[in-house]
Amino acid sequence: MSIVSNKPQTTRTRIRGVYHGEDVQVVFVDTPGIHKPVTALGERVNATALDSVSDVEVVCLLIDATKPFGRGDQWVADHIDVSNAFVVVNKTDKATREQLFAQLQAVSQLNAAEYFPVSARTGEGVPELLAALSAKMPEGPLYYPEDMVSDTEEAQWVAELVREQLLAVLKDELPYSIATRVTEWEWPKVRCEILVERESQKGMVIGKGGELLKKVGVAVRSQMKPGAYLELHVTVDKDWQQKPDRLERLGY
Image 1 (tube, helix red, strand yellow):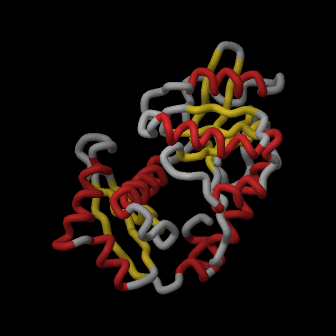
Image 2: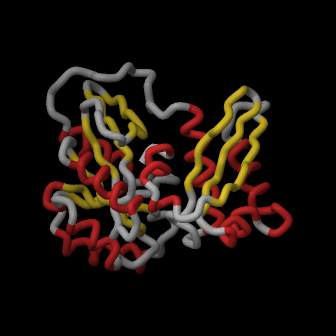
Image 3: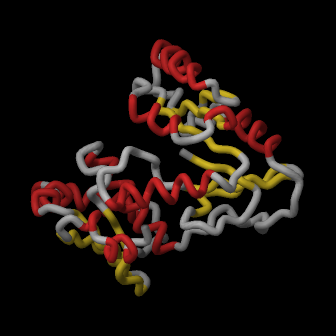
């Protein structure tokens, strides 16, 4: 889920991007994914996301065109005002025509304000989405300078990038059992801690002979400034998702 506003945000959500158009500024705000919670972390994630929704102009419900619309998607839709939301069906470049048609048929039952099939990779359909979002923005001052595209600090960005690359490699094996944070930043040395809940999960993250962790490190370094030395360290913290002090320390 993504939320769009033209105002600064005061919650724990973060600005993922600022679009500067002609006489318009659209602020894309990142929220944690809404899901059926089974842990203290899940409850905090949902509370943060739903609190953010109340103070924006548009909510975009993101749907994967390559996967069937399921109970999880419906659960999220049931917790937002879909009648005022945009349903954005992403990955049209990967989906077959049959998959895309089936997905658009499935989401049509939501009775959303508008529907947009897009490809974030190729940009197909994005101009139309931006135009519709821009039209929803109320009149007001420009809150951010034209050269600003995000408010994410570099250390935080690196930690999120490490987690993103890990999940890309591990697929759906450890979606909410991994947390990352940068514990040392003395350029060019950057140390990032990867938190898991079980010893078995540590082995999964490291991979045979350390190959998986090495692959993640290479992918992350390729997106950092040249000369970066990235050290990845995996720590087991049993049931960290259930510990309020850990959640606070990790920024949840």
